[in-house]
Structure formats: structure tokens, C-alpha cells
Length: 168
Image 1 (cartoon, rainbow, N blue to C red):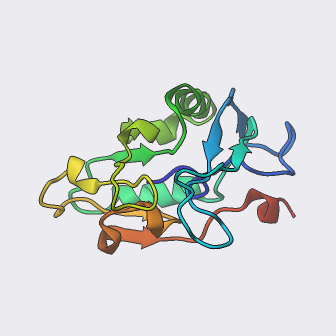
Image 2 (image 1 turned 180 degrees about the vertical axis):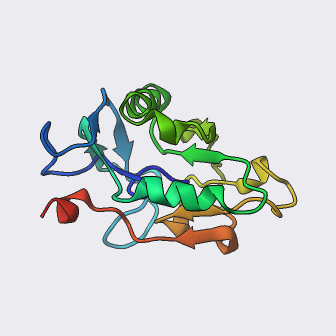
């Protein structure tokens, strides 16, 4: 499962202590690898940097979703991906575990920005599911952004979770 804007939202402008699911220390700056207006690679150009909020909202009904995953025959567990750097990623995971420990019971892996595949043929650093199963017979991904997935046919694209819309 992809975390960023799929399961969790930490980019909300409206998030605060009263309406967030939990708070984590995040000192993460994410560079834009693609120009949002043109779609061109930003390689070799000055890039826009996005600063993440410390208030995090979990996608509504995520616990129900996990229960449905558990019923899939052969279910072995959940692996989370995040584009965050290690320190911020672990801060989020540890804070979430304190807030909702039952969700973490099925988490068997946690991969940060360091596990994304960087390749000259790719516009963006991407997830490569072969690291879990080289045959690709026993894996699938839920992600809001297909452009960061090498095996797009195994991705179940779901809408981006926008907490600002949810807070309304």
C-alpha cells in the first residue's frame, strides 16, 4: 500500500490538533521530479520543494479496508511504501502505531524513499514489486499515482486522499 495521499494525508492546509488522526514529527521536504504544468522531467533544473505538515489524517474507513484485505485467500500481510526519507517515515509509522496499534498487526514491511527504483528510463523514482515476488504472481499494489509504479498492471488505482476535501 502506498501511504502518501493514498492511505494517509499529511499535506492538508486545514489539519490541526483537533481534526487530525495523529501528529508525527516530520521534517521532510519532497522535491518535485516532474514539472506539474508540463509533465517534463525537472532533472538538471531548479525544483519546487514541498514541506509536509506534522498533522496526519488517516483515510476514512481504512480499518474496514484492512479487514477486507485479510479475507483475501493467501493474504500474508501489508507492506507500506512512502516517498518520505527514513527519519520522517519512521516518525509517521511509530506515531500511527501508538494511535492505532491494531492496524500494524498485519504490517510485514515498510519501505521508504530509499527503496524506490531510480533509472534513466524513468521520469520519477518508482516502486518495483519484483522485490517481493520476482514472478509477480502474489503481489498487487494500491496507489493513487500510477506514474510511480513499474508494474502498472498490478496497481489498483484509487483516488488521491485529499484531507482538505474530507474536512469540509
